[in-house]
Length: 598
Image 1: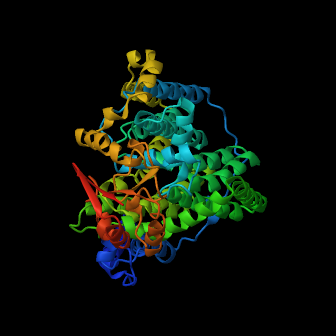
Image 2: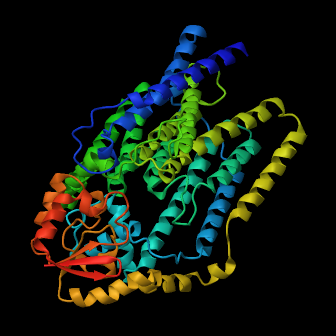
Image 3: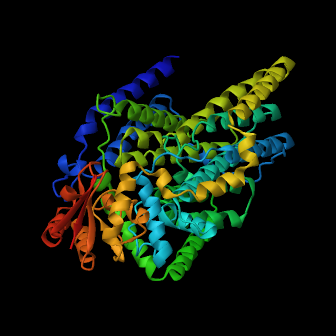
């Protein structure tokens, strides 16, 4: 008890110290040229990542010093030792239970009511205008500036539109619903894999699986407008973790290393920020391999990654250079364009409470996993420890998503893996206790069976299943995909479409200078330049390139409904605005929109 009190006091003092120095950690930001919150506060884009790392690791470092110098514990890397030959007895009940959960996942998917809410002309515009343009001219990065990833913003929706032969708002939303389904399935498979890895009795394993399935059910839903604890954009991260855990189950399965290598490359086409996490996780895997002297696996994976990059270089041709240029631009500028300064922990700043809870949870998780490196007790089997290390690493990396745009929604989206990991640890400790101390008591096994059945009932009852919807799913889907765009638009937006069409009937293209990114798709005109989502622009280089694309542009939609999101286009892109004002002298006002004519 004395030791627990001492280490707790030391950790609390270290957190207080980390909080006190938070705002003193700052790099020079006087050379920022992109207008936004960072510009107004002279806030360097590296400040928040640096503050995060220091804030989190000072308490972990303090805990490590305590273990070294007070407890006299020695560091042991045995916790990171792979045991690919550990025997796994097949549990048929767990296997069939997993199939039942997957079956109900599909029933829930077939039961959903398709979303009919009004179009988000800003966010959803990203997933309409880019694929529509690509559908007409076949271009990818060369045709549209990509903010997250080409699959997420373009190719996935374009592919589905080619299948159904009907570009529509409904079919765009259906693709996102499919992504949610894929993530839900991936989480179920991940939990099943982890449950097979742990050393518990059969009934305890089943209960462990059911607890995690029940919790995971609330991490994400099919409401596309809600803020989930995990985003479908995390799909490649979860898949990479699945392949790694499967590798722990199957010794020398090089196919799994090929799949991990494939994700190292293709994740950049899905979402750039998630790709960084995937590749950092692959570095983590390499460290595990190195410590286990599995140099052949490292060499094979590296070679596979290089081969996949070469394949995509050859397949994409000139588009590959546009991809590289686009990705560098995103990594270099997006923090300054979209950035919201991360709130100081324990302060009265907006979203500080949510951020502080997440940061403290990450610290606690890091301390728990660090303790594994000092513990000689084997409560966990070696592979389960490595899974916990892997999840902790991903939880730490995932919070990076919230550092560039630190609002409540983005912070919440980083908590999914964190919640899942804590749930795993707590469930395992409790069930291990039952196995060790009550294994001979039939009442406890009866209690576990009763709890398992209760959880099964709760899980199934939480699936929103409507058999009427299932029976006419194909008919409902066809109707949804064929719904006219007007069904998703406000009266003002319909008025704009009806009144602007005569002005642009003879134009091959139009150009946006508003954040209303969906307008080119709604008007069935391609954007004159690749810059349609101008909210993501800001640097002088991009503005000059934007201007060079306006030479053959006659119509510019100059302002719209969402331009008050942060800096207005006219203020943020002042070079472009000056050019437009000097050349486009005619103006037409239609409801909330201003149209500039050459």
